[in-house]
Amino acid sequence: MNILHVCANPKSTEESVSKQLAARFFGKLMELNPDVELSNVDLYQEKPPYYTNDLYRRMWNPVFDEAYEPSKAEDAAANYANKQADLFKAADVLVLTMPMWNFSTPGVMKAWMDQALSPGLVFELTEDGPKPLHNITTLILLVASGGVYKEDDERDGLTRQIRGAFGFVGINDIRIAWADGQNPLINSDCEVRRDMAFEAAEELAEELAEESVSG
Ligand SMILES: Cc1cc2nc3c(=O)[nH]c(=O)nc-3n(C[C@H](O)[C@H](O)[C@H](O)COP(=O)(O)O)c2cc1C
Image 1 (cartoon, rainbow, N blue to C red):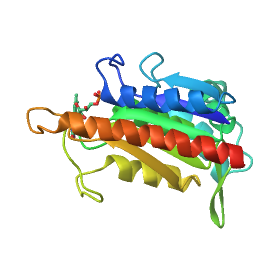
Image 2: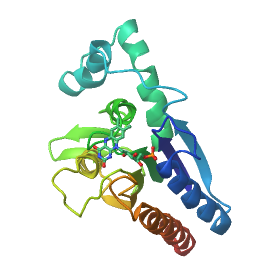
Image 3: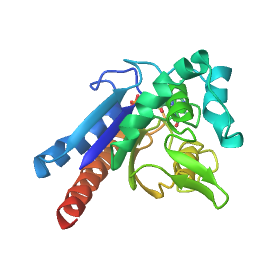
Image 4: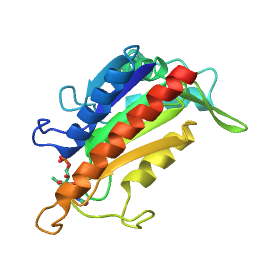
């Protein structure tokens, strides 16, 4: 199994609940399945560049014009997106680790998605809609938030964004371990909630390990 792990959190693991979820998930997975190949992208070690007009032209002009020839500047602007798309295309499972910030994903995660999820790299646009150019079928989302969110909470822009963006490129099997209610000032049960999410993360690892054995 080839896993791409993309993490958007500036904190150390000791300080970060979402990184602790990732530690539990990968700890359990490695214990169960030594055949895992793991690529780590830490978005605070190497920050994704923001989208530029050169990148826009390099990625989207070929969609509309077969005769399009990129300039050197446009090619250079695509370096980061190409590198991330190569990692994406080598994986069959994607793991995303992040906190909820302002009801959505941290800005670096959104910047990474804007780059990696480019036409011609991980999907192509056809008359029948977007067609995947990668092999990822499962996305594991490991997230922590201060507030408590019920399923389909209309304030939650995070899981909605992830489902929308990755569903568009053909990844609809999205499994979530979410440590919500992590603000101790408003949730006296934050530790119970964290422990439940740790268990959920380990169960996701067990599920994945079982599936990789049964093929
Ligand atoms: C900039 C910022 C924005 C935040 N926005 C939200 C939010 O919209 N909703 C929420 O429930 N918690 C919010 N929080 C709280 C974090 O989601 C919470 O502290 C979470 O445990 C962080 O995960 P971590 O421990 O992995 O860093 C915010 C925290 C920060 C720093």
